Image (cartoon, rainbow, N blue to C red; front, side, top):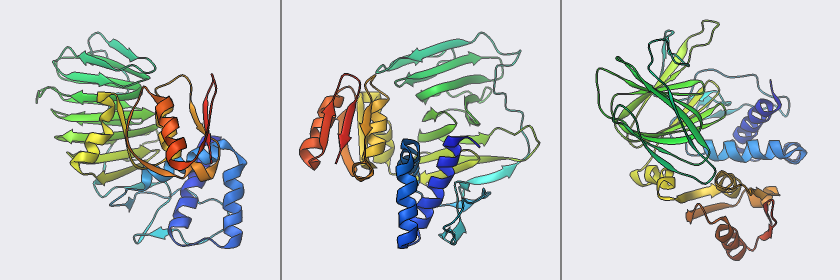
Length: 323
């Protein structure tokens, strides 16, 4: 297991422990020590806590090994959960040959990129429309019986031209998203994939492992969002306004609703060469809301200073925020 995966799994266990009641003094000390041990631990904890906080329905498809003591039951909503939580909408299916790379029958592949701070509007050969967000790369191809896009990095919004003879498939890491005609977005951060549906319905499949184990599939419809990490897929039912907020980047805006400052800073950093760094846990845990111009990170930092009394240090290399 990599250091990042270990930090993620440990963060998940701590989140669940804290959600199930107050920690003992010994547990709190252990948690504080783990959090302070590295920036990677802090990032894993605050990012995962925000990603999973809005879950409306959670079921278990598999539980990885729990980290070492402090040991106590990790139970919430009557279900054991530890990063391998999956959604009520998920069901088991047999192995399906979803291609993760172009097949011999695929026509020419076109690569599209959006650089740091850029957004691009694209018209695909089949008539579908794609908007690329900052730091994003896709490859697109069409064949007689299917249409495929590979999201290699970043985020893209799709308006798919309806064609029942040719399903539209988006490959994103270990997930495959299949639609006939709808409006939805897909975001990929390494192995983590999130999908938000504005209209229509999509199916999210876990690409089968080579060891022959079963793969899972999840159906989501308009107003729903799915977040996948590893073998886990978390589905939430969102209001129309919250789905639109998730797509605010299409208008050059970033919209936050009780978002931790750590996550908001990470989001702003995607749009700039000068990252926003929150240097302590107290500031990282502050929850903020509002709409902000993605290109104006300095204004965002000044608002944090004025509204919360935070210390802001602007250098040519980074914007550092602390309590």
